[in-house]
Image (cartoon, rainbow, N blue to C red; front, side, top):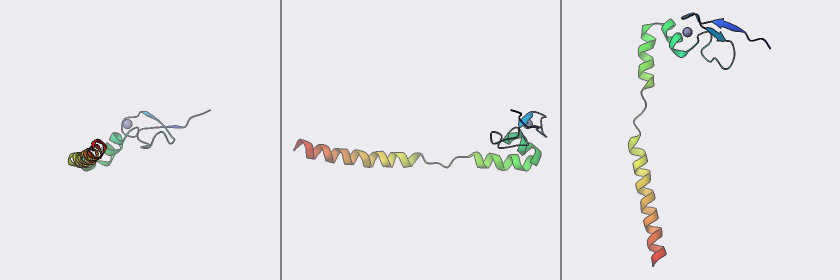
Length: 77
Ligand SMILES: [Zn+2]
């Protein structure tokens, strides 16, 4: 079984040409962005920021607690 490989244009690493290499012909997303230029590196940093969702889980937990308390009250009557 022969595997087709290409060399990453940025760092000359051998890259397997297949579904396991989503950034081909580059070896990684980083090398792809380096090739695109500095501006692309900046936009990548913005894309990496995750939306702030910490409050959402707390609200769900509180609602669940209320539900459990009501069930307990029914049970112990
Ligand atoms: Zn590379």
